[in-house]
Amino acid sequence: MTSYALFLGCTIPARQPNYELSARKTLGKLGIELVDLDNMTCCAPPPVQSINFETSLAIAAYNICLAEEADLNLVTLCSGCFESLAMTNSMLKDDEELKAKINKILSQAGKEFQGDKEVKHFLQVLMDDVGLERLKQNVSKPLNNLKIAAFYGCHALRPSELLKLDDPERPRILESLIEALGAESVEYRNKLKCCGGLLRGYSDDLALNLAREKLENTSKAGADCIATLCPFCFVALDIGQIQVRAKFNKSYDIPILHYSELLAFALGIDPKELALEIHKIKTDKILSKIF
Amino acid sequence: MEQVQEEKSTNMAFSKVITSRLGGKTITLCYQCGTCASSCPVAKITPRFNPREVIKLSLLGAEKEVLSGDSIWLCCSCYNCQERCPQKVEIADVIYALRNIAFKKGYSPNIYLEFASALLNNGRIVKISQFVENKRPTLGLPPLKPTGVEALRKILSATGFDKLRLKEESQ
Image 1 (cartoon, rainbow over the protein chains, first blue to last red):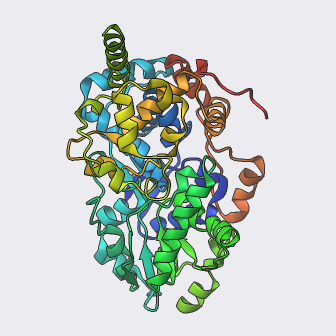
Image 2 (cartoon, helix red, strand yellow):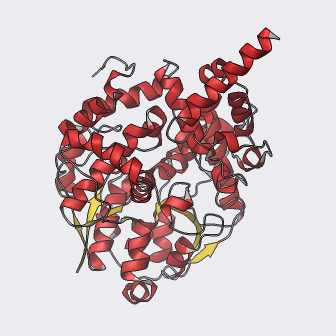
Image 3 (cartoon, rainbow over the protein chains, first blue to last red):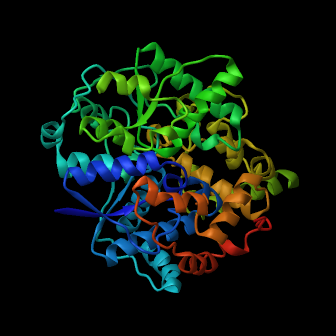
């Protein structure tokens, strides 16, 4: 059995049990064991990088050290955590001087970064450890009638030189994983553009403008729902959709589902076990097309 | 002439501060082509942010204008500009370097001050409430493992993060 240390982060346990439940159940069903480690912390995502970059690298490296000590590779669900941890892992592996500098900080907490483990996004575990063929074989409720708009967000893909998940301008991994469930992956305008999530709280106006554009373009393409990978994209487009409605007087009513939730449906996991009530934009019309 | 000399040394000084910081070292490679601005989703919808402009002003030494304005905080960190820059300027990282300098000088938006205190106090920038934690078993989720707050504080102290101008803890 393949095992990973699960890096859960903050936003998912605080606000999105729908993501955590679907990820745990689907990986379990596909033979991937998740191990929860003691003493993990914030991953030190862009807001912390904005305050002090060096501190954010040290915090990310500290968390990687915990996985190294447990002799496990790490998997993240949140793209913010992925960016922070995978970027740090690559930077420190490639730069001895930086590694020494960060290790000096880590020594205060009794840790030393070795650089012998991988940090993977949930998608990569599905692609690399399960594979499309085995995934297809496990689908019991194919999503044949669904048109899904794949949305990568930013931090699963970029900075691509450090994250190495897929081509940053023409990625295919999410589309392939959507098609493996029997659904159609629909193309839409400005697919790779940001959801505005990180501007929420600093400039809600600009954030909602970006969210509206995403909703507009996916709706025009005839998508039944948008598949997300990141809790911030989810908030920007789900709760954001209610705010867009209030601000621009325009209703889209397009459900936002994490890819893991769509995968759970296709694997025949009971939707009642998935905390779908978290969704502000109700998922009923998606469920009625599948079950 | 004297004034020109003085300005020149100021310009150099700010560039030096930026290039000496993590993320800032590539700023001097910029030749102002504007690929960043045309790739920027924020610049498309507001005149308040333009990455090319931020870099130009920084290289010209307009330290106060760059650090005290809200422009640098409007980058959405999408890294589109950085991916496409023909000069390999790490633009998003340069913006982080500028934010780091701004934060140190006390030009820090409230929401970032809140992030900083939350990190220091809870080990997380998003707090997990007791209510949510108690609800986990009913949802079929395993209990949360303890957070490494103590280790994190040691790291924050070693980097001087805890000495940054932080907001009083309100909770």
